[in-house]
Image (cartoon, rainbow, N blue to C red; front, top):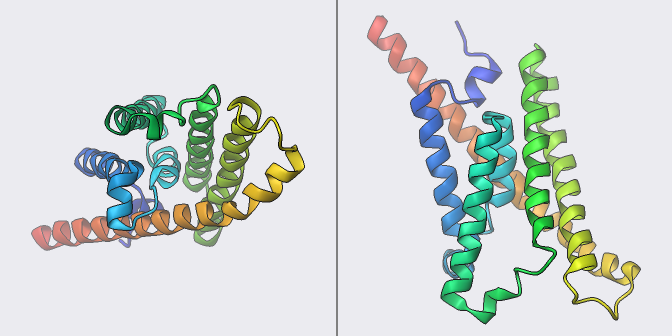
Length: 203
């Protein structure tokens, strides 16, 4: 019997789930700290990681663990680079974590919709739509809190801040979408290969 979309795009065993979480964590380590990501010319995977965590796992403990990892990486960056990275930890920093939680929530909602829908096109629309909406909300949360609480924009109006930051939304969305598509395609390949191996053993 052909695999359903959910069987293709979601972890189908504990081993695959654990391996997926490890890959997600390693990708954040490799791309979140700017020395590594700049050397490798890679965009930060964090947005895609939190969206996919909500889509694939949905458990709150996964969100908490990934948030803790993000904070640990940022603290490590400050420890290594000192003042060069210390500005990241302003009173606005919780807004970054709220943005990640929004992406996770968007993924979680999409996962629930995929599980209850039998239409493959509709399932894909839910995933794509949730990623777009989650990214927009995350972008708004991180930027609104940074403008309001970082203490760096006392001389800049809100309208000017929006006009300067809005053009960056496309880059964040495109990198999140690109990483998510690669991850979903990779998951589909893993599941198809595992299904083929099982069929061969029982064939």
